Image (cartoon, rainbow, N blue to C red; front, side):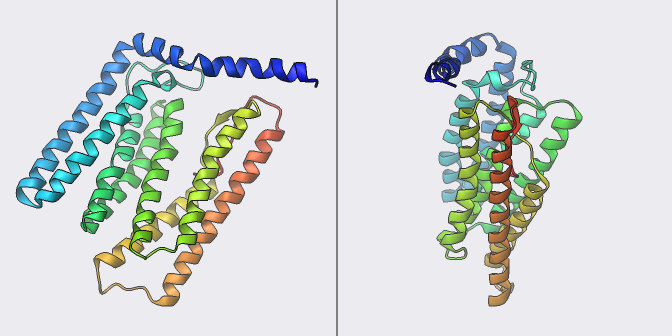
Length: 289
């Protein structure tokens, strides 16, 4: 392949990138029902947030109620803007646009939005409530996948938002544990590398002209369970002083977490290399997010 052929091959990709804002605006303008259903969903989230925050402010903790409202409301607004600017990805794998912001995407959105109140609860010392939010977020991860497959609600946006929600919630919990000296820095870096590799893999496959199709693997599912249990145990240890892991037990838990993160990194690397080698436009690129 000569330089001219390379240039011609890269031209359509650059043109698609430059046309992104215009295409997004056209879809935004031509999707009033989808746009309205998304805005209504986010409005309901804001109303629920106001009710919960006000109740906490009046009856439990004034500072906590204010913090929940001040930090979560802007995150909902920002998330709404991001989704509204990418409505064209609320479509199936064949490009057919959805008419409504459906249940599976709503559950995924709730999981992403819940990261902010979970962090507020953690740093305010309400660890039990934060652990409940983390558990409910993990539960929505299971439910939204089932709903999407069962009722044909899978979308390209959902396939990106789903791992993003997992990444944000998991990274947030382990970051808090690291701040409280209950999680080693090397393990937090390893976890971050694992997630950075996921998005770097997307970008690299795009450069190799591969259209990514995200798909969870057995490795990813097993590691997801391990990291949820690991985070839950470490947070629970702070909630109940009587429940103290012995030095050997804690070291073993951290070792298992480290090995599981490494397993995902190896799996993602292997799948990414195979995806580049396969000469077809669509490739599975996730080694288990």
